[in-house]
Image 1 (cartoon, rainbow, N blue to C red):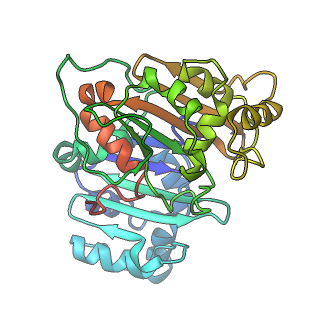
Image 2: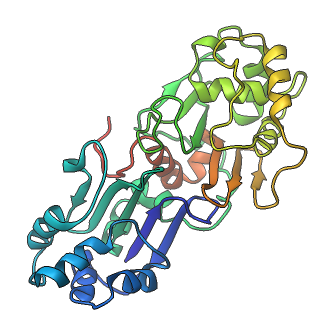
Amino acid sequence: MYFVCRWREESPFSKRVVTLPDVTVLDWFRRGWGCDDPEGWINSELGDEVYGLDSIFEAALERNLPRPETIDELRELLNEHLWVEGDDESTFIRLGEHSLRVRTDDDEVDLAYYFVDDEAAAASPDRLSFLLHDTWPLPGGVAAPGAVFSHGVPVRTVRLASPGPDCVFSVRLCWESPDTGRNLDLVGATAFPGLTLPDLATLLRDADDAHRWPHDARLLRALAAPGENDIGSALERYARLPGYAPSPASLDTVSAHDAIHREMLELLVSERPAESQIRLDAHIAQVARYIDDFFGFDQWFLFDTQWAAGHPDLARSLLRYAAHWDPYEAQH
């Protein structure tokens, strides 16, 4: 079984993935039920603290709660005694036969944690592969010629080219979404249909309707330099931006590319932090930008259908990761 904590982690992916010996979620909670040091037990089991998770075990001690025998009994106990915070707490504890998904916040950022058993992981790789992936970077290989990719996940669309079978996807995972103001109130990836990753930089820069685009597409355009045809250089500049919500002040009002790029250059630090990670391949570019020792990292992935067709489960699950905090949320 797996445990994942999506939070301010030291990992370049901003998540902690731990393998557990238990067969089911129920087994893990039953094994810890009645432990005399819940916080210490959780730290030992899961590699560090998990915000609010010790509350259910503290309640079991203080109230002498019976050890759950079924998933339904565990669900009732979690709904009654597990501490979660947020605007819609009634939907933030989601327990099924093979997984538990919980969302809360630590008064600074949103976080989510997950218990996923092996049966669930094997049954839904298109939902869980990225969530369970813990090795930086993502693989760089591509599919054989002629392979196709379809995703079935909601995305926002920016049209820079004529329709065609290829598409570039932009997934930026950050601590304060410019669209919602929260890091887990997610609006999905941005798709650029009709092109591959090597085409992106030139078409972004030359577009004349950028004021209509989603924020992240405008930010990427501002990072691309005049005359530059390699989008990887834009991500290298992103890694040199300071702060947890980097953006030129005029990004929403200045549409001329030269002007907004000059403003972007004024924000850059001379060198990217040593902790930052960047990997540039022909059909996927990825950066984990180190912010500080509190927030850790944020991430930006740019990939096209040639990469996605070679890693379809990883690509679909990454797009889901950018669309909703719960990988099992119904999406159409």
